[in-house]
Image (cartoon, rainbow, N blue to C red; front, side, top):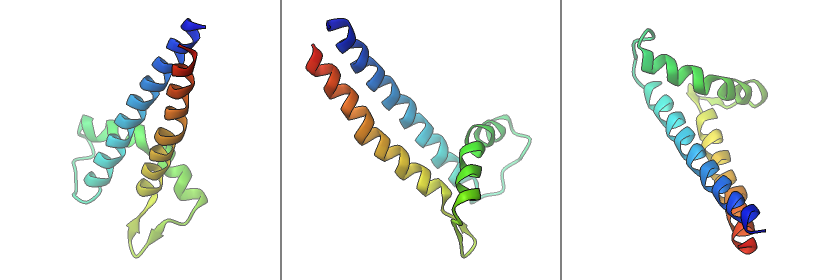
Length: 99
């Protein structure tokens, strides 16, 4: 049982870290949309390639473009925050209970 508890705690913390860095990537992408970045820059291309699949899914299902502003990054950030608070904390608490 101890191994399962440690595994759940480690999985929760790893998921929390990955979600945090993805949220920072979404924020960086949103900030880049305010300026006119070089589309051939490798960092800009990385940010677009990592974030566009999820942002495109949100944009295609929900009309989140009001007044020329795209609110899909905000929806993704709120979803990531919910997952971090609900799922990650549940995993860590469940794993801690098994220790």
